[in-house]
Length: 317
Image (cartoon, rainbow, N blue to C red; front, side, top):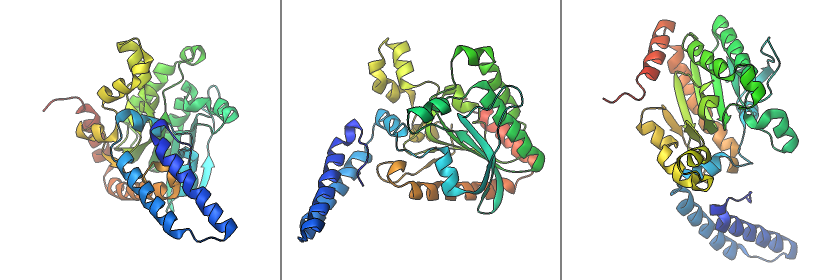
C-alpha cells in the first residue's frame, strides 16, 4: 500500500512505489516477475520493521498528525451502529470540532464523542482543525450528563492539538468551560473510557479526558503542550520541536511508566492509517473488555476509583 510519506518514511514509500509499478508492468505485459516481487516485498517488510520499531518521540508525533490517519467519525463508522449525532450546547451554538451522539457498540447502547478534524481545507475550516470552542465542551458535558441520567457508558476519542485559543473563545469562557468539565466529569456516575487516537494536546484533550480508563494509541501523543510550543518557550526556537518531544515524555510508552494512562493500544505496522480496519478491531477489543469490567462496579465504587486515579497522579511514592 502506497501512502503519503513522512520524511523518515521516504525509503519505504519509494520501495512501495517500485513494487506497485512492477506489479502493473507484470500484469500489463503478462510477464512473470513473482520472484523479483517477492524479494522486494521481503525487503520492504524488513525496512518497515527496522523503521517503525525504533521511532523517536518526534516521529510518533508526526504519525499522530498524519493526514490519512482515521478520525473520530471514521472509528464511529467502523466500530458502531445506529449513530445519532446530538448538536448544540443550548447556549450559543453547535461546535463541529467536537462530535457527540448516541450509538451502539456490539449492541450495547453508548454515548460517544470525540474531536473531529478535516480531510481538506474546506472541512478543516468547518471543524476548526479539531480545536474545540467552549460551546463544544459545554455540548460534551450536556451529553455526558444525559448519559449519566440514562445509565449509558461513555466512549471518548481524543484528537486535538489543543482547545481553540481565539479571542471569541476566550470571551465565551474557554478556560472556565474546560475547568467545569474536569470537575463535573468526576461526578458522572457511569463508566467513561477515553482514548487518544491522534493528538492529545493540553486542556483541549483534558476537557473530555477525565475517565475511568485512559488509553493512548501506539503512535499518538498526550502532552501539556505541543512540542513546537514547548520549543518556542524554552529555546525560542520552534525548530527544536524534536528535542522538546523527547523531554516532554508524551508517548504512550512514557505515559504508562508514569501512571498517567492505563494502556497503550497497538497499531498496525506503520500506523493506524495503513490498516484502519485492523486498528478499529484493536480498539474495539480494548473497549469491550474495559466496559465489561467497569459496568460490573457500583456507581459509588466507580466514582471513588476515578477520583483516586487522578488525585494520585504526580505524587511520588
